[in-house]
Length: 501
Image (cartoon, rainbow, N blue to C red; front, side, top):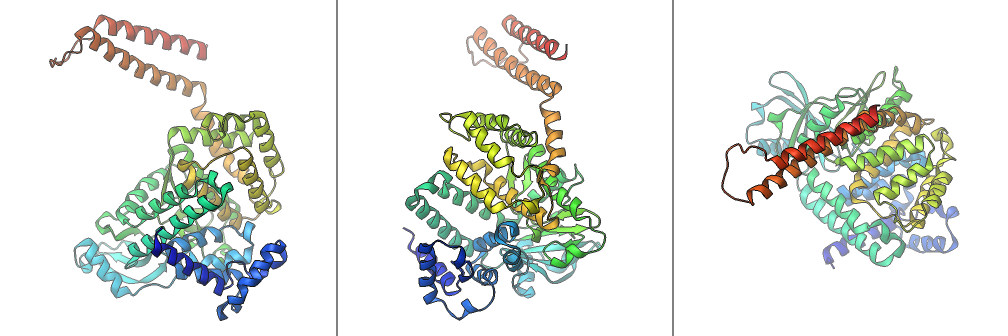
């Protein structure tokens, strides 16, 4: 066992107990008798800070003292007012971008060291911090050519903090997997490793610059969301320069009262922007909490902080789109079939029973406003169903699922009566009509035929030449290769005629 990580874990637990943030007294009436007795016992060790503030405020102070990984957890919790309550979420919201900054003089030294040049040789002005988060802080600056930019600088020593936090996270995951049998199907160690890897990549701002450029190009193909451009001459491992993001920070509660904002359209754009990235392009911003979003009237959204990028392969994108489309059409049998085809549900289960379970979850919430749906109850139902049908964690979907939870929370805060299905509908239908249409099927078959033709031709050439290694310049196709090509074309023509006729 990692003794340093275990000691840090004990310190974390002790801090939560001292702050009455582990099982806060305010939730005592909701707890079973045994848990209530445990909470009262732990409260005997609470300190003075346990009497100061609401549960969310006490937890926020504790998470802030633990470091980047804990702060990331607090950011996710703060987006789900529908589950944990509005006041609790609001009390955690300052973890998004209002942490204590480090000194600007230190930031200037970090910039010069990372870029290998005097700061005055690139920036005409370099101001005080305008936002400070768990891993880095941002400064307003002006380029020599007059462009207004934001310069992101990593916190000094952050690599060591993340490494220590990551070891604690892996230790906790290992203990959960070993001691809590029902949690094993969720692969807690694998989940922790995915989170740790994402954090490691987040510490290289050159990777973030590349992600911002790539996702920015994807966003530009739709009008749902946009990204500031990368200023590449101001990019280093610990420094990132982006064009200034216009708009008001969504992390500021006053922003929602700004004149001219169409809050329903903003909520729709958050959902559609994320889905378009994931389903249409297979690459998405995987950290879309309010601290990384700016809005302008009436419904423009600008995203920043591309340190965590999620990716989906063509197969996963297809499964996601078909599952969402099945729910939109209330075709639970189809949704169940996709889960079985994808291997998300072991095949020894009954597909019709799984479809019935999906109906039990989907029907009570379909078409209803978000304010009428208890997300806590819905998530509990989903967890029960996944346990009943032995669904395990899918590594390729971890960032997708985490981002979906965050994005839906943001949309609900923007517009409490938001209908996630109505928002998702145009993006999902667009994908279905493009990828599952007869023309798309013909294109897919044509690609398969060309690949098969090339493979057969290579095999035929190898067979005729006896696998000789003598180099031949521009070899002519053999008779067998031509025959294979003709057969493939004839077969494709037959398929075309069947589909289009």
